[in-house]
Length: 161
Image (cartoon, rainbow, N blue to C red; front, side):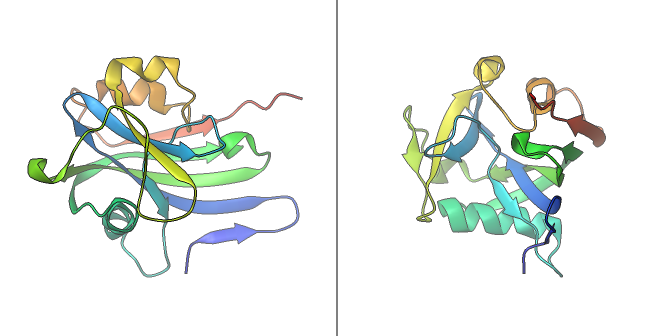
């Protein structure tokens, strides 16, 4: 059962995501109708270790067998995705996969699940041009190879009134 709490005006969810980098490109996804990119992942489930959540999501969504290398960040994301009073608690892992298993198309592609998600491998130096959630990732992702400490980030999305 996914870890999500909602009432009339507020929501909380636990999201687990993986950072997969190959050939200086990072795998991101968005909804078909959306314009914001996020790291592949999904909601944590009750009685499921978050590292196993990351592995499960890559298997379900992409058919990829990944292993968790290490925890990167814990991001408390307030007003997540521009939604007022949506609090997302995100746990982000560096994940690795067998090189032979991964192809890197230059265009967007659809994953295995029929849920309207589009994936794309994006050059790390192009991240500054994208709309990425949570926004803190724009600063964190380019420094991933040089920073080996787990970081706890508070990320508040500014809402336009």
